[in-house]
Length: 272
Image (cartoon, rainbow, N blue to C red; front, side):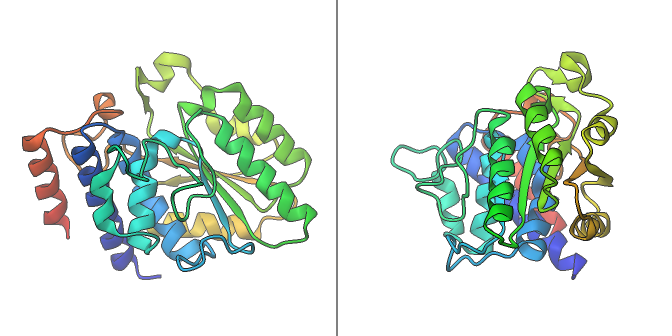
């Protein structure tokens, strides 16, 4: 694992996120940016995938359960080689295959169409069960927002995953503490998140979502865990990498104007 290379790749993914949302004049930058480091590790280190064969039946699966963070998924897929990075500029444009939410029928590398919160994790659980029933060794990863876990369906899926001993499932919670209406603890507190997943018989790991050594160690431990699914609670910064977006709920679902775009790209270019 080359941490410097991973950091550089994550920064390129963040540039793609900002560029996509700016050109769309709409979208969700905050949660996409907070997810970028874990997405980078998943697609460039952890998962068994092949951009040249995105439907390989033995590939690992990924479900972006918080489907509104499509810019983060798209930028990751583009930088990994599933489609041209230049296409990110067509996000949400009429006729573009890069819709506001992931579409498995049109976008290479997208394993599940998502957008209705809570449904993605349920689908991921089904994929993990299918692997067990088919005696396949692929793994399934799903990314949830911490606001998303206010959905009851998330806990139904979690109960089922533990009951079926789906140790090939990894649930990642992007714990940036903010949702569209403000702080998650003020809207409808899901805390204590760690204790909840433990109560549902998950192996639970807490990490800094922006520390690649902690990220790598968490996924290693998840692979080594047998008999129960794993939940990685990743403490993150919403809008990570762009100073005026960081820890600001207002950037949950808003596009930067021209001046803001230039400032954001200037900051990200300075990092690389």
